[in-house]
Length: 402
Image (cartoon, rainbow, N blue to C red; front, top):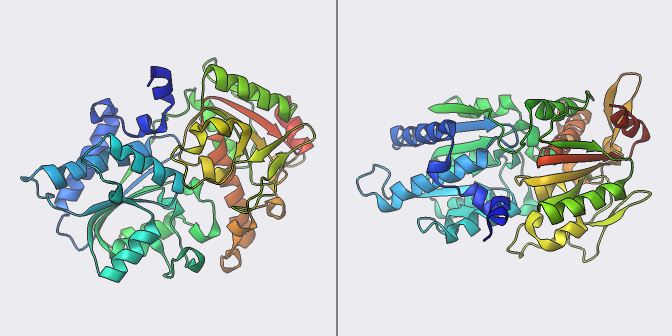
């Protein structure tokens, strides 16, 4: 694999050798391993790792899991030898990535990686107790039953902890995308603080190759404020007046740098797996949504045909792009009087994301937060450049004025 192609590979980034981890990452890995050793016979213990998008959470988890499986399968002198461990992720593209990693790590097996519901149902049926369960993207765990997807209990984290001695969680509250996975810090801490637990916070930004002001701008936007555009010679931040021009720029960047893709908020009609293409469309631009291909071996962002598609938040979450072109749809507008973003859940096409909101204390606030979170995920994918186009004229004018 040529070096540039390797550097763009999600598998290469995820499975980097332990000696390529930063000092902070190596220290955290050792901290987690020691926690597992200290609590190997505990009734239950939880290690919580938090961090914003791009802080290397999945890289840490992958490295920790590889180290644990080496102790479990190849180190007879370790107290963890023979332990039964599994890594869970409630994201089909990320699960595909983890399973593909077994080809370069003999200590890992494809059966080591599962969806949470699969693990829970099998453990309950067979009365099994795993030793260590690692959960990537724990903010995607269900907080209520979902019979359609074969989860009939009330909370996936509770069930995972019930069927494991030690749970290691990766969590980012800003990446909750559905009401049925509506996690908040207080909920999470109430569950883990009654038993042995430890927490760690990742702060170093690995994804955005930019000054901290760029990440701060995205965070400020997530808080419904539009700040002055940061200027960084190493990161291209640009607002386009035309969505088609943005797309042509993305195509050019994909030819020269690779891994440049179009993304959009879920404000354009789409129906999953109905056999038809659906389109993201503006006055000058029309491109199909990403096609659902669950059996494809390559992840959406690295498939050649995905340059002719627009990725959704569900497709791109967990992955990097070199350049991201983001179309902000009509659910996000700007009010010049209050100088704040206004969120319109009624325009969000993924109304299924709001199912169960009526049971929450503030349903409208929860819906708005989910839209803001989805926008945050889209905007935080880019390593080298972020291009924006807003459908709302007021927001577009505000962005162009910066």
